[in-house]
Image (cartoon, rainbow, N blue to C red; front, side):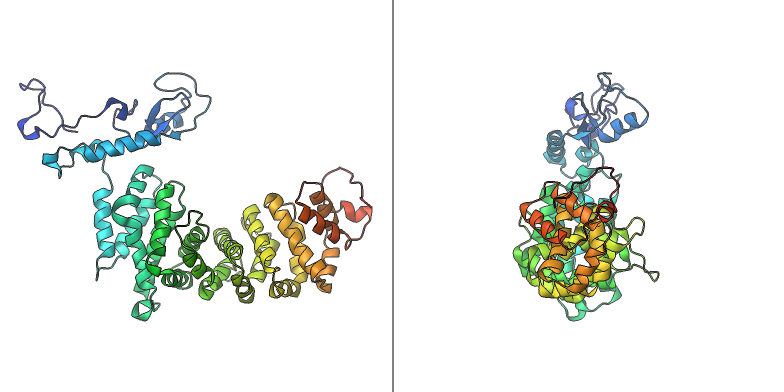
Length: 465
């Protein structure tokens, strides 16, 4: 802020600063710091503060509202989006017309990313200029937890940011000299994917700005080029982090509910044999010891589940490329940190989609000794009722509909299978799942010992027959 002279001027501004004074509305200032709020958030008392200031107050052990001194039953901070937009509008119009180049207005709210973003985006889009340094800076800015959400969203809106970064993927995925896996080309695509993945998947990015990413990648009929670039990163990226970023971006496009990513883009991603193969490889071992990486498994399975949910044509190709053994490996692993309820539920959904085709049922039956016990063991343990019903669908398809001897024997020998089927039928499942479970019950030996096996409750179940 421009300071007033305290001398003989009687509190008036010096001549060189005339016309540059910025009048800040009182309610734009934080009650704690008295500075213009960058990220206004409200307490349960209704008073709004700058996030950084009130967070320091709470972290210091205070349990009262600084302005009212009332006790705080909750320390949740709710973003005041209306006030944030008012401040942004004020900041963009506060500078006098005669000094539009002056940073006085911007300084009132601290450094804004607009000018820096414009320069970085210019470098990214400039022909003959290496975009990697600028892309890395953009990615670091968006990934920094200390950077305010307001500034991140301002960057996402600035000067066609998503369109400019997406152009890197479109250019580098068209083949020719740029299509080769040269180090420089892969490095540029990898950096662009990192920026777009953060924009498309971060909770702090507004929905409108996320949609811009999908729309930018869908523009100009560039779907095949985008799919090729993403597969390229997953094949030749610098490390596992880059491959996970690419998978996260793929998932955001496949699950784009707003429709900004046209069906053509989703179809191009789902039908890209190279991309699907890389997603399956991502779910596999991450090192020579054969261990799995939790982030990679979750990202890869989420993409595969989205693909099979969106198109039937991709199922046979996924089965051929090895999706079934990859999903079974995740279900069967006991490695700490790998799997979890979400990943196991996604693996079950991949298998459920796979057994909808003859190729998928055959693939499951080929590894029945490992697949069936793994599916039974995860029933009622992951993904809620949806995961349980997916497991029943898999068992019913290979044991009842396909009637494969290997699958039937593996199911009948699985520990606790009968008990879990009975529990599912008592848990308010869908009529279709109930019917499948009742047909599967006939394969299990009915006796008290097997009925209670694998079930920790002391409850006695009354057999329905």
